[in-house]
Every structure is written in structure tokens, then in C-alpha cells.
Length: 308
Image 1 (cartoon, rainbow, N blue to C red):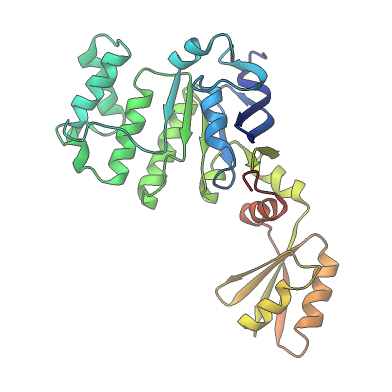
Image 2 (tube, rainbow, N blue to C red; image 1 turned 45 degrees about the horizontal axis):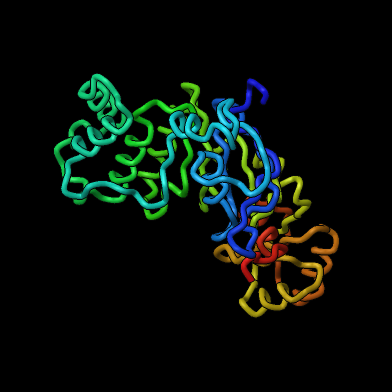
């Protein structure tokens, strides 16, 4: 493994029965980097994360995580990783402080009281430390979960859709904390469905139904897609949108307020298609910016569900 990589895995494959859930994926994540792991539900993100943190053994593939062999040194990997699952697991009838004390005992952290107090203060939980976990809102539960999985100061943080069901303010505060951890040297791999969260990552990896389709910065992934976007303003009715979507040169049509975003591979063909269908309507056609969402919809359209 390169000394600059926290994760360096090649050709990871996981099968459950006849289904190949993860199909020969390779990934490198540098130390201190935040990488977004994206893809539709059932695409293999969670299975990949569980292989990387030592919870699942791959059927094929090899690599290192934090310098440890993925197959032979799984226990060592587990000790240095913080893993925040999709569903927060706490004792509802214990307070925030008591839940963290329980976690500190699991990791044999000493002196326990100092670890708990420092964690409470670092994540803004100290004033609420006596509140029962079961009475917390989604945003505070999320913050408690983050505290629990970073308390032992892991070198690698694996987050599996950590902000699902959390309000925008709590999501933004959560991401500010993630960037602070990364600035201190922690490596973060986070799966998410939110495009604004993907754009806050240093790089992204897109997996669809077990296959890795794209890796790179947001700009690189958008550029690599080859998609072009036109913005059509004016008399754009729902009927026009339907006609445009059926044209062979147009891949996507998305209404945004009073405008339509038209996406395809060739700008000239897009303009011709719009002109042909919208002839007689008062419209303006401008070059638009292709978004990450446009690219992901394209990936999903081109991918086959491996469970079907």
C-alpha cells in the first residue's frame, strides 16, 4: 500500500447466493480525504463499506485498510475504524452521557470520565448530557452517533447514509464537523444520496448495482460523462416536456420552475431537437451547466439491476 492511502483495495467481490452484490470494485482513498460513495439503493455501498471495515469477508479481491491486510488483519482494522450505520443504535432509557460511557467501556478508554467529557464538549453535547437518548430529535441522535463512533479517535471514519431524515441545518453542521475531523487527519468514506453532500467531498465514487462506474472530483465526473445541458425558457408546457423527452437525441428533460433543463450528449443535436419540437413557441435557449444529478440519472438509466 502507498503510505498516502488509508484505503487501497482491488477487485473486491461479494456474493450472496447466486447474486453478485459487489463486482470487482477497486478504490483508493488518501489519508485525510473525504470521499463520497454514491449510488442507488441496493447498489452495494453498504456491503462495500462492511468489507472495508472488516465486518464482511470478500469472496474475491485484496487490499489494505490503514496499512492492515483486508483479509488477514480484520481485527486490527476494526479497532482503528469508526463505523456509523444507517440506523442509530442507543439505549433509549440511558442519557447521552451514559450511552457514551458505555461505548468508552467497550473500547477500554481510560480515564473514562475524561474521554466522555471531552467527547461531549467537542460535539456540542455537554449541555444536553443528562437528556435521555430516546427523547432526542433526529439531528441530536445523529450527533450522538457521531460522538460514539469517533470517541476512540479512529483513523478512518465510515459513514453509511448518516444524514437520512435529518433537517438541512443539522446536515450542514454535521458536514462542518466531518471537515474538521478530516483537517485533523482523519479519513472519511461516506455514502449519501444527497447531491449537495456529494459536492462537499474531496472526491466521489459512483457504484451502480455492484459495478464502479466513475471516480474522481465532482468536476471530473461531470466532464467524464460527456453530457451537455440546455436551459429552455418561455412557453414550456408539460406537453412540450413530454414531447422533448421522447426525442431520440434527448436523454433527460427536467422542469425547474418555468424552465426546462434538456440534457444529452451533443449540443447541436439538442438545439435541433428543441427547435423542431418547439417550433411556433416563444422560447429562449441557453447553454446550461450539467449537474451531478444529471450525471447520476444517466448512470442509473444505463445500469441494470443485478437483483433482477
